[in-house]
Image (cartoon, rainbow, N blue to C red; front, side, top):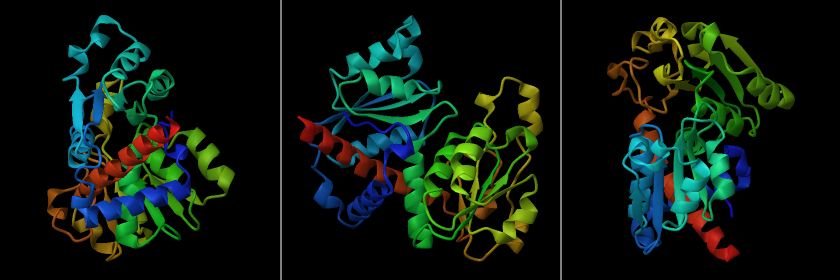
Length: 308
């Protein structure tokens, strides 16, 4: 049974196919409005979410399907000690496909090994978030026309930011991409990402703590929030949370066609004054995320039917 746990579960060709399908859905929504009539998506979110959860649910409804969900982890049998394995075995009896978010790295993989329906990882701890990466890739494609020869700045929490880890893995497969990694020393990209993704592919990257000096060279700036929920120490969070705040003043030396991205939610990292700047793409990412999830659900359910 095919699931999506990590962005590397998809080949470059499959990602291109998903983007083509998403763009066809954007262009011809009526043609897809009843594709999944009679099918059910279960959303299992053991961590709070607004965009990802509602995006999955909107995606399923717009394909003509239905959604079942638990209102929160506290209201599920997980609060009684039920394992992820048992939860997904149970939910597989009710739904055709599962989208799951969990605070523990590896939980989605455990779910996929125990479910009898496809599982989509909607974020597992600080590990990865493949469907956010699909949203990011469609945004970049539509803004830049492709992925080659881009200088991509990643700013903020690069240690715990699962969206960052997934995006680096995805973009590392395209030619000429270089990365500028902008973070406090305490929140640098994990060494395994630099070793296993960047260094082993010979992909150029630089690390800096200074956003201002990095901005002029960037084609894409991917801002992230410092995530309070990943910190063990409140003092460390408060010390680092406002380290990077993007303002109109700071954008004066940036390229006129810079694409400013953010997986959201934002706290203080991007001034609301930038929302009207034509370079702001973060609400476009939200919109494109729904279409990429529609394409992914269609792909996984079709493959599941073909297996049977």
